[in-house]
Length: 568
Image (cartoon, rainbow, N blue to C red; front, side, top):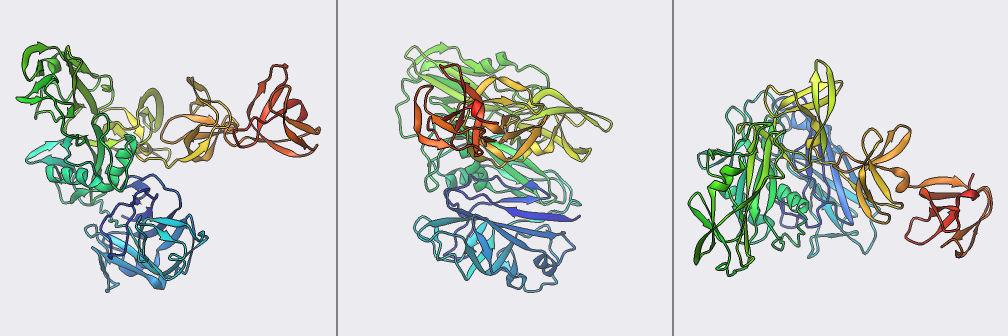
């Protein structure tokens, strides 16, 4: 089976080490895609970042190292590459250069592309840059960034590691804790760092598979960093401050047959030593909890594995969690159970909280993941909100139901209708599907809203009454979408659209000389815009106190308006 593999990367603000090739090398995270399916999360791109993209074509068991090298194409975002020659390309297997170029590539080894003699043009002298997509052999500063001069010539670039897949291998990956198969996890930290989360997951859980394929973590470090970003937790050199509550890290388990599954882990950040003696105490499964944290349900818990379209047994949850006023006061407290984030219409894993609050106003909140649907399903994390479809023969019909970004849903294979891939959800026999693309995060670019903007659906109809006000920024897919003849930007990872006129504006021609106004009675400046001049206006016109309509002009926050009557 042919694998068209593309290594694409978005630079991380803090470069995370993933096994540097040499002591002077610094590795940035990359998103590796096989047949356009991402193998890792996309980190947030940093300012002054240079992204190196590697494309190659290879088939496990068929393509030789030489053929793979001959297919390599290199490009960069944020700079222009010079000096690329196929003769300067090498292929590494498990960190070692392949010397016998007749060697056929396989689905077991980890590969990297190495290219020497490169230069990065278009960089600004005096500015430092981060490198994404792999490592370079030039000297970095204390912040692991590189000067423009250091990147100008004679640079050797080594890509992030990737693997080929072999679809003939059998099995679907899953996760085990000891001898038990688990669909969710929970860890507590002794320090608040990316590496501490990675180590905690690796020490408690292990990828597994039944079949001829091999299973492994896809990229724990990249998954952790991406999840921290989603949770609004900022990193500083790999460290973070404990957030207000536990948070979820979604990690991916992959197999070398191309199959993956998502594994959500609730993380309890390290908290400084505190006095919990006045807190209520909740007991679950024989363990007492005197402060808020994430927990794992015992195996085969009665209220877990809710049937699709079933009802969460809140009473059973309340009965399983007992609370008292404090460690020194054994008077009973009632607990409250919040299942508002559980969507029983879609098989998946959802957070549930159990809270106890005592008369002193102290609270303890326990969080656990509740499973809806089959416990032996393969789970994937929804990266972008999308509709649920039904399929009748070769016709896919959109329903009003949706899956939300961040949800971990049970998946049961894919089908293709009219060139679009759909993934079956909920059960092996269900007639509910989502577009497979919802599991791939969209790369957004930040744009400024220049005019108050409503949200629209894919059909061009307004969605609700919420709006984003002018001069705020929003992340959108940097490609215009035409809906009923109008141009829109899609909000990244959401099923929402914004009229492009509110961002890019519309070019209009003046039919009269025109003043620029600040208010209905005051001019903004002495400038006179001449007849025939093209001026960009933003959004719909405003009606001023004098009853006349004005367009906002100028890509800034200045109060600059021109009368609508002055335009053709």
